[in-house]
Length: 174
Image (cartoon, rainbow, N blue to C red; front, side, top):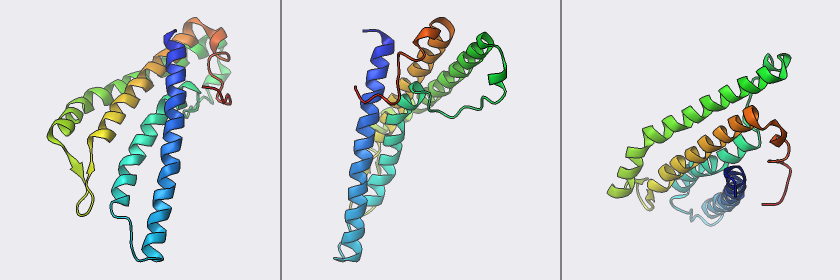
């Protein structure tokens, strides 16, 4: 299996997992609201769980957003340039995106390891949420984002015929 197909499948799987996680969070928030205002029994720790989960959901979905070309692009000037220049500029932008996520990885690596080793927690009171899952998801999601940006640069420079065949954002299959 090629790195392109592997990153596509992994990105789609993580996107579905993040969507399911967000869907489950909506039920947690609703249960907390009902418990708080109807039964006077809130679910303690909901705010901490949701806060950590937002980071996890975002970084699980970033790889798919990149690969399906759903990231924000300001291409109002680039679209007026010749096709080859457009592809080179896109590839340059993808390389800058890969460098950005590499900086996130290198900047967060030490803190992520320490968070796991020292058992870092967030929140006070009834529920303390471990910090390491969110930190490691940021690293993992950034690594996949970096790989996907490099894949996109490769496709735009060397294999323009794969642009439409590799990823179809509307496809339902994994």
